[in-house]
Structures are given as structure tokens and as C-alpha cells.
Amino acid sequence: RTRNFIWTAGVTGAAVEGLNSDALIKRVNRFKVDRYSQITGYPNIFAIGDIAYMETEAYPKGHPQMAQPAIQQGELLAENLNSLLKGVSMKPFVYSNKGNMATIGRNKAVVDLPGIEFGGFFAWFIWMFVHLMSLVGFRNRVIVFFNWVYNYINYDKAARLIVRPFKNRI
Figure 1 (tube, one colour):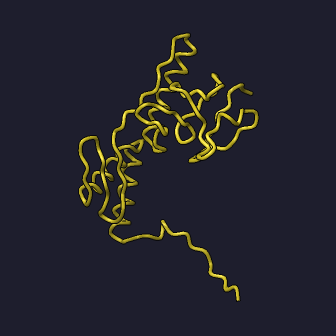
Figure 2: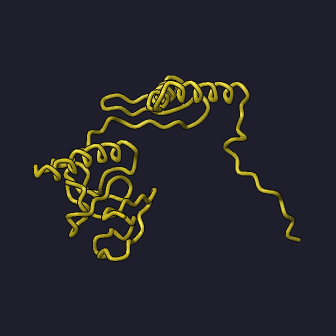
């Protein structure tokens, strides 16, 4: 038994029984949080990532619902929870935009880093490298790399298709 409740929601939040519905931002189901990731009106409940709506001067409509803000919020929240246990004041969250990358097809990607933007094959290569290096463990990197090479050589799209049997409705 525990007095802690850890809730993972995915991309969109859902109402939690017992929380004031005013704490929710209705249009995107994100909990309004302060600079310490505390849900408005609940100093002992925290939200980060996709379900957290934190207005700042730089991000008046909240931080982007992407991995980097969630990772940075999670790292700071871990530090802040340790600070709370020690009776030390918490640090406010400040998002550091490291840039964005997206693959948009075979041999094509876009990279948007602070001060530089580019696309094409080189961007696709950079996208692959960054994603491989962010995997935990050498073995995982090697396995994913060889899967990518195999799929690239064989044009294997089967892993990305959802196939259902066809049923004639006549």
C-alpha cells in the first residue's frame, strides 16, 4: 500500500475523480500547472509532459507536446521532489528548446535546430543517428540499427501496416 498515485495518460489527459474540473484546460484536456509542475490548486499533485499546461512568457499557449519538454520536466521534477523531502525550495521549470526533427519519408527528414534548418538525406541521417544514440544500451542500438538496415534494403513496409481481412458487406 502506498499514499502515492502515479498516473500515466499518454497524449491526452482525462479527468481524475476528486480533482476540481477547473484545473483542466477543456479544449486539450491538459492540467494547468505552475512553474513547479504542480496542478493549480493542488500543491501535492504534479503533472508533466503531454498532460501539463504550463503558461510562460516564451510559451503563452503551453509547451509543445513533444518528448524534450517532457524529459526536461521529468528530470527537474525528480530534483524538486528530492528538494521537497529535504525541506529545500524547488526550482522553477525553464524549457530549453534543443530543436526538432522529423522523418518525412525514405531518405527525407527535416531538422530545425536553434540557428539552423535543413532537410533531405543529410537531415534523415542525422535523425537516425540521434534516435540510435538516445536508445539505452549498446545491444539495443545494434539491434535497431540492423533492423533499420534490413528494412531499408528490403523496402519492408509490412511492420507499419495494419492488415485486416476483407469482408464483403453485400
